[in-house]
Each structure stands twice: as C-alpha cells, then as structure tokens.
Figure: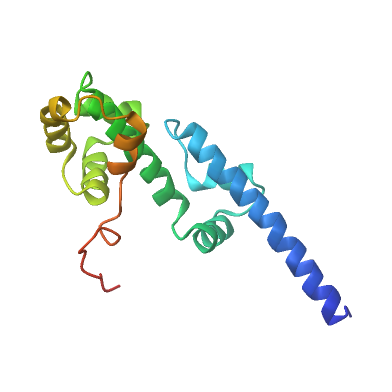
Length: 157
C-alpha cells in the first residue's frame, strides 16, 4: 500500500503530465486548424482516451477540444472575410469546415452575425478603418461566445 504523500506526488506528477499533453493538443489545434481533426485523432496523438482528453481539456481550458477548434477556425475565417477576396463558401472550406451550414451557425454563435453579413459590414468599414493596424483589428473583431459578449443573457443548462 502506498503512503498518502507518495499518492499525492504521483497524482501531481500525473496532472503535470496531462497538462503537458493537453498543451501539445492545443498547440496542434492552433497549427492544424484547417486539417480534418477530431477528438479521437487528437486523443491518439496524446496517448489518451477521447473521453479523458475531452474531460481534461475542458477542465484546463474551459471548453471542449471541438469548441476550441471551431473558435480557432472562426477566428481565422474573420480575417479571411475581412480581406474580401474569397466567398463565404471558399472561406468555410479554407478554414477546414466541411459543412457550410455548420460553419455559418457556429460563426453566427461566436461573432453575433452570419458570415455574409460580417463580410458586407467589413467591406463597408474598410474605407472607414483604413490605416488601422491589423493587430488592433484582430483584437477588436476576435470571436466571442455569445455568453461572454457584453450584455449577453446567462443561459440555463
């Protein structure tokens, strides 16, 4: 039987190991957001079960791996839509989404308007915002979950 202090040390070591693996998963999502990624593939790459990865990722980062992936994709999509040289469908596929409907729904949830409306608004604002540094534009237009948006009503689960 293990001594309680040794068990705590093992548990702490395991937590650190899990956090390192979770960071690698998050970094992989950041790098490969446009690739076909799913929780099973991410879990295999981290030598974890899909369920364990999902639970631990949510504990560490406050959202599921899928939600994190979609946020990265929508963040990149906003930049592509601001450029204005691609259609909404082209942007959808460029960021790794395979369904225009799912992309549009998720975009609307995170940005607060459909991608086509966002693109029109940004095209109209391009003249008004000319000369604004891209780092400022990126921060101001960063996707925010509706529940995090100012004035958002709390959602009952």
